[in-house]
Length: 349
Picture 1 (cartoon, rainbow, N blue to C red):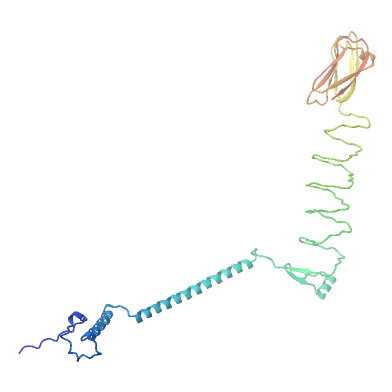
Picture 2: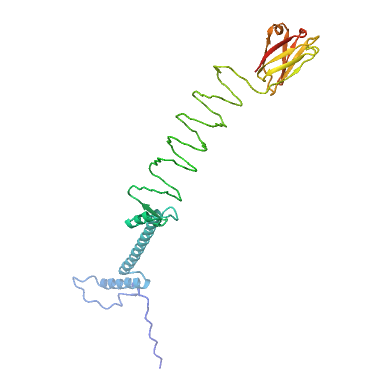
């Protein structure tokens, strides 16, 4: 007895149209006038089933599945957009808060806030009765009405005055610094030091010495009972309404050589600027120099020396001079009369 044949495995693959023959199909009914061509409906049915089977087997998404997937992606994108919007809003708010905090933050890290404080009636009574302390150093004392202090007022720190200060009595200050303009009717100072320019519209009376270390410029008239200067430089004419008086140390006269003769003498009165010399000849004078005048202070360059003979005896001499920065000499080309007195005046410039 033969074993039964194993059951035939069903074919998982969908049959094609070629495996289906018209002969294997069940006999069709009699064709009617309204029926389609024999075998046509069956072929269409088989094709539709085959196409659907292939679509399912090959994994091609159906239109419903594609629409579902599209909607799912759209939901994800919408959620991402919402998150991005919330994140951007949070960032914007944070930047705005930071800017506002930076603007409102004071420039100084530590600023003292002074709190004003008004005096009450009881506190004013305490002030009138004796010494008392009101408030602290970080507060401001506001006094609205006018105030009169009968006693002394001591201010231990700076005093800032926004208005005008009127002082009807003496004002004693150890140091005064004025950055602007100061109008003072009368000022008495033990020592006044002005580092900048000073303009004085009225008269200036100086009862003691005036010491000026720098240059001075006077556009008006300068009147002085006595003016003593070390050096005087005039850039214009000099007008002197009275005499010119010169003073100073007298130069040193020394007798010359053979022009004086035996026993002759000389003398001088005056200064380096001007003076007079007297010459007394002895016996047997000859030609040469009578006197040499040595200046008390030498000149920086050879000065101009002007001499004038005094009397007819001096005028009859054939005199001449020699000069240098330290001295000048009065001489004669011919011998002077013996035992004769004559003189010369001199001016040195």
